[in-house]
Amino acid sequence: MQTRGRFITLEGGEGVGKSTNLGLVCDFLEARGIEVVRTREPGGTPRAEAIRELLLDPTPGEPLSGDAELLLVFAARAQHLELKIRPALERGAWVVCDRFTDATFAYQGGGRGIDAERIAMLETLVQQGLQPDLTLLLDMSVEAAQARVVARGGERDRFERERGEFFAAVRESYLQRARAAPQRFAIVDASRSLDAVGESIEQCLTQRLAAWT
Ligand SMILES: Nc1ncnc2c1ncn2[C@@H]1O[C@H](COP(=O)(O)OP(=O)(O)O)[C@@H](O)[C@H]1O
Ligand SMILES: Cc1cn([C@H]2C[C@H](O)[C@@H](COP(=O)(O)OP(=O)(O)O)O2)c(=O)[nH]c1=O
Image (cartoon, rainbow, N blue to C red; front, top):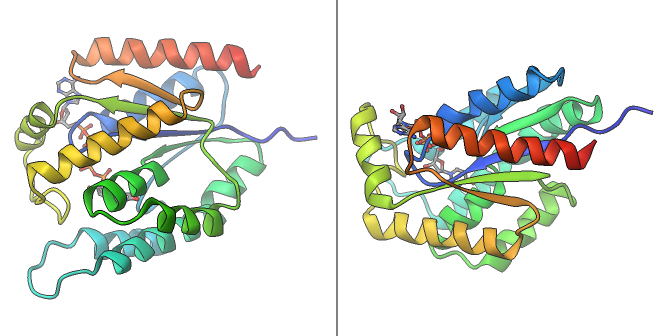
């Protein structure tokens, strides 16, 4: 019987280094002979990426209602799960995803103030019990992460234009979720050098791999 693959997510606020470290996670696993599917949310399939465009579009004018934002996030996720994540896990590949539902609890929950119970209802509907096996939460101060976003350059999307209080609430929600599920989460101090962060991530992956095999 084919063993189901593992599902690993990277989480954290803007500029903490998720995209940078995603490659490191994938390389680490591939070097151990594991088939890896690298993906991201919102997005991951062409139609889910189209929903991402809608969510990130900073064009002023018509605001996006909180519920519309929440439902779009889960619409993209439903598509991503059915077409990409579940088939990969079922054939035994491992999925490494830049953000998943913890981001919804942090951004739509903590940031926008949507009740966690409403989010949890959609989580149950769309995921039917599927949860990441490991979530690497890259954590650092909002101010230092913002400085990285500024240095990275480029146009700011709809979320990146939010105020400092929004990101402080996002960070706090992530930390609360990590404390509530310490088996699933590993909190990584993302304020350190790229090498030091990478070393912590590799240590964590080494421990998990040993526990899973
Ligand atoms: N540990 C680090 N130290 C210094 N700069 C970093 C570190 N990690 C990432 N960066 C830089 O910070 C910026 C944001 O990183 P990125 O991976 O795009 O973050 P995210 O995907 O979490 O928004 C990029 O320019 C990246 O090169
Ligand atoms: C997955 C997800 C992302 N988001 C937001 C967070 C990000 O600002 C945005 C896009 O994610 P991402 O591309 O990871 O942003 P960045 O690389 O700049 O950190 O989508 C939500 O609000 N809810 C969600 O469920």
